[in-house]
Length: 279
Figure 1: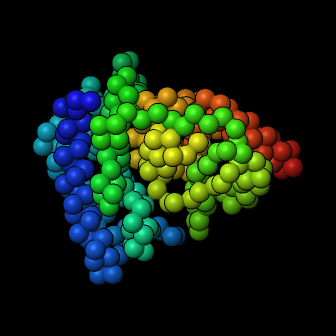
Figure 2: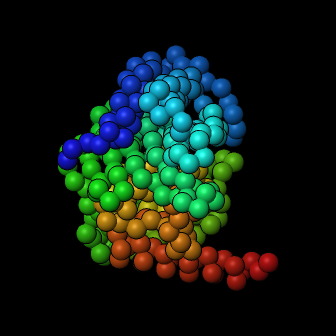
């Protein structure tokens, strides 16, 4: 598949930042780390990766805006797209020497009516350690390097591997997560938590997982992965089943059958919880 100019720009930026992450990962014990919240660490490597991505993308698209995990929102021209970037998804893995982390870049267009933001039209998730580059463009499919991706065709829960994110100190709802887990785990082949949502969604697009659910993510965690899933023939929505341009507050993804089955399980759990704890 011939890479478009936009994907080439994203690929070049990701590989440049990824080279720095690989170098810093080799010296992870020497990284300077500052604490910015409960169980939420930001490293010098994270900051350097974001700066490298920002500088590279700004140079080629100077009128585009940015949504950055560390740098916040930087406005561009109102009629131009914006970049939604996670420079190091899986920071805790990185800092503990676990080789499972990624760079996530998405391009999101403004709505035609000028009221907010519309579809993600290009996406790239790059895993520096494995040198895997997952990319997608709207209506052009999802790809791993030059190989076309399709979501898994499995339709039975007992044959399916499901990914999730587990609540940790200061984030998430452990009781809610445990209720969903308890309802789902007995029915599936396995549940995995690797700690990088962008890669979870990229792997789902590649058919390595059959489903994914999580609450409390941010736009930069899911913007690129969401387009990968859609372009690989899957479905991604919030827990109410709404297909938003970027699903982050609640995320549910899978092929058509698995998405429907997971949606029913989560809906039943939430309904049971609300009946036990009426407002």
